[in-house]
Image (cartoon, rainbow, N blue to C red; front, side, top):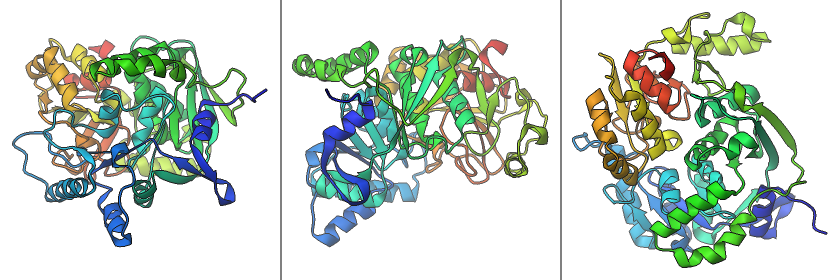
Length: 467
């Protein structure tokens, strides 16, 4: 009788081409996705070695990181050069590219599920750590470096050591007002930014099963902020319904009857053994906001900025002091007293249509506070079209928010014109808050879309139920 296996183990073993030395495996890659920032050197190295792309039909490129999001933007010279390079490289090697202005353009981790390209049991890699987003669909998806990009382009394989298995069991149900973003921040605060190091996190339990597919993507997306290689969620009815809708939209109905049974197998066996298990009670999760310079430094909105007594060691306190100095916060200060200059809704964490709906539900009938700018950047051109079809653009406009015409990473990574000025403070739905992430000497507070919208209305960190 075959031994019970975790979902990660199932996908991994199905893709091993052959074992390598030192415990590594040569893994077959089902889909390789590229973006404009981290790929030029890989193509240069291919040319230098006289190699070509082995499976251009299993390779897809997008323009998303360094792309303008408004029609009147002054073009970033670095971004223009990166886009010229990826266009030339894709044309030379026969790779499909969703370039700026295309109907299917957008953030890589948003458009791949939209286009029905991510299916349970696949391996997908990209030169971006938040490829883990796709784990919500039962996909083993992870980010790779430039050297690995060249290897996958040339061979459609990747030499890797299998990560350990970490289960995050989430019991109960999320209370009203708490979101997948808050659940992710709660987990990271509990286990730290290194708690998932060397592991694939599989999210399990009643609370996870109760999440929508888009909320699951948010949760898997932020697995990286816990230090893990990837996040995974087993296939259930919500997964299959989402995939069926995607397949029907792309005209792939005939494939569904054969694919469905295999999809259903993409979950851990009942008695599968994990290397470690972390337990969370979803009923205790509240709206959260980061106060420091890493995602683990976060608290409930009704808390106060931590003081020395809140830390177990002098080393932890010293690290907190450095973060507080950078963030210009005082120990004991109420999180609700923190004022912001900018609010950003978007990114691969919270730039999907569900996120925009949640922001709109808070903004409806309200105005963005005087002196605050609010940027709302859709994760894809398709998300923007849907938002317009639902009238969300009218809600955003009436509130005084800037709903951008273009889709992309925008202020999340601060590579284009969407940056904070030195000293500016933002409530952001992105995934990272380290020093300078959204602009030189900028200060970032990670929040959910609802909290971001409520904060835009008051100009300070605010929960929707306080409006």
